[in-house]
Image (cartoon, rainbow, N blue to C red; front, side, top):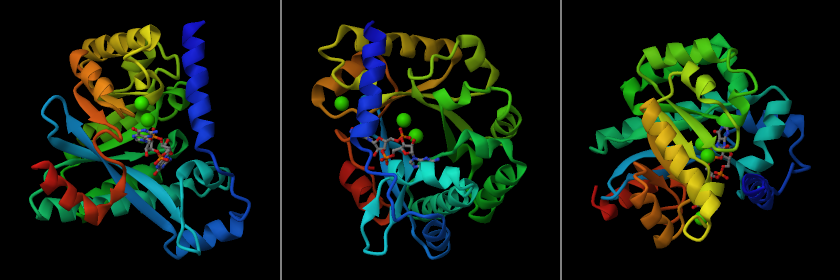
Length: 277
Ligand code: C2E
Ligand code: CA
Ligand code: CA
Ligand code: CA
């Protein structure tokens, strides 16, 4: 089954980057770290196709260990979730993202900022409140904020986060369905949530120039997104050949190492200038 092969590849990619769960990340160190500034946020550019104009960034959490080394999210986010600390982590990531966004705006860089949320968090009203409060505090236009939720997690129970997602959307916040293609959602389920953006999982972009099945999946994702009126983002574009194919298929936005890797907020401005934005 070719689709299964692609999904296996997705799982393999995920575990290839898996270093943990890191043993030193106990409940105590996690709590202490959350209080002492261990949470760092990097930002990865998202550019329009075909002109490469910077239109936004995705905020990606990092854990700064005592030794100063950065630990990737795959090694600690699941542990944070298990210990019930995810709302606190998300609050910090979101607030840092809004602070960064306000700083960029001040320097004339008008871009959207997307932040990843665990579906669980989006069932709690405190989380809705903290999002609205952080947006207001930094004077950000809600239309330049996007919240990303992964397809597989949301489809486990579409109803649970529906109200908060709908309320956020009514405030103007954009909603992205992340890792699309790995969650087997139906059009009916997708339509229930007022998504604005569909992010095609890296597994389908990877090798698509050579791989018929991956290409077919890309094509059907783009056509589904068009039907639902969603903007499309291709993740994990690493080569010119992948970029060319994505452009040919009519994908709106690209995020991937071919354009830029995630970077600290203060490097983004220099990157944007160099990119001509
Ligand atoms: P994601 O949301 O799918 O984020 C994209 C991931 O793909 C990032 O990994 C990014 O660095 C990586 N990436 C981007 N372009 C390329 C490329 O061209 N090639 C390759 N090989 N990789 C690329 P990262 O930062 O390690 O994040 C991994 C996952 O951790 C994210 O996947 C997301 O699910 C989760 N995550 C990150 N930040 C947060 C957060 O603040 N909250 C929550 N709940 N989850 C987060
Ligand atoms: Ca994401
Ligand atoms: Ca993704
Ligand atoms: Ca690739």
